[in-house]
Image 1 (cartoon, helix red, strand yellow):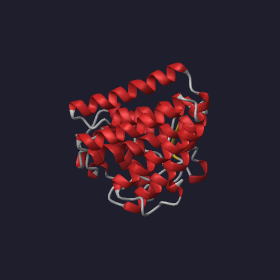
Image 2 (cartoon, one colour; image 1 turned 90 degrees about the vertical axis):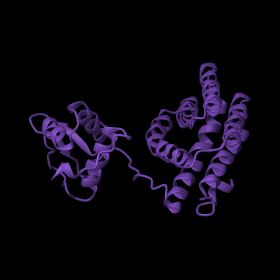
Image 3 (cartoon, one colour; image 1 turned 120 degrees about the vertical axis):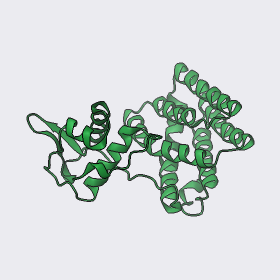
Length: 244
């Protein structure tokens, strides 16, 4: 396998790019179950990056359940039946059907996360949610995209649901969602008025959770996901769940 063919973009996380390239090779069958990857030193030379980058990329692949480290052997490709984690393919933001499935999935998952958060949140979690809202507002004032603050809000909300499986799964999903949000806002920056509408949607969720109103939290989160889908132009693709 010639890793020198990998196109590494400096504008994107090097570790992410290396991990995506190797993952793609595994998916396409360039590596089979039981195959051993080259050493970190060899991979670093092939990709033209540091061993630290390779180490981080391999750690992500292990977390995704594609690899495992074996003593005296190295990083070994796992069989599909042995992979420990659920996987989502990379989201193609140009593919409306792909985006539609993502938002449908988010609607199913996050509306009930919001409802549980309304019933189980702590004061410190509400304080952190408030900070995330302030960060989103500050991003609008500064003209930045605010995607990091947006995702922080959803992650804290998942923590407030007090179900570790939900929180862990949303952290995994975060990487997929962040790519969509960040790439979209970088390509099509929101005008301040639209950005404030997005902020208001988050505030409605916050107020419902703070008021311990599970049903309102569920409906306001579903409305937010539906509006997000509309902004992406995909509501007509997968709209049954998002209608509420």
